[in-house]
Length: 99
Image 1: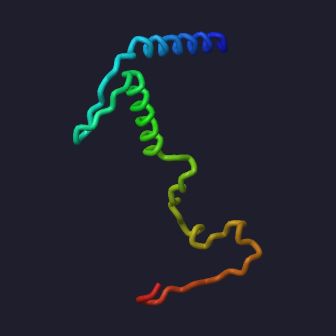
Image 2: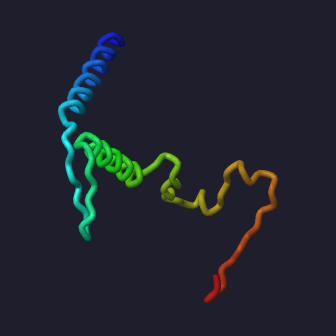
Image 3: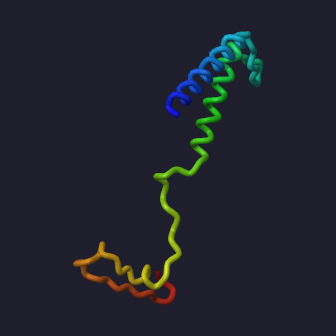
């Protein structure tokens, strides 16, 4: 299986290299106000592909993002977990009109 993956990687690399060699024609990317960028087609494709990857990563949810709040019940209100063991309990009350 590992040998097969190496063959696939080499074939894909050769295909990408041949694509780059075949698309070296200069293209003009025109902006507003008469600005223009002249570059090889392959470079323009690479730049816009990388920009798309960055936008996709920025738009996707990350593993280090804050977790979604849990649906709590009485156990969450009482907070009977071990992390508060040994600490004095503080009870707070709400008064009408104040938090």
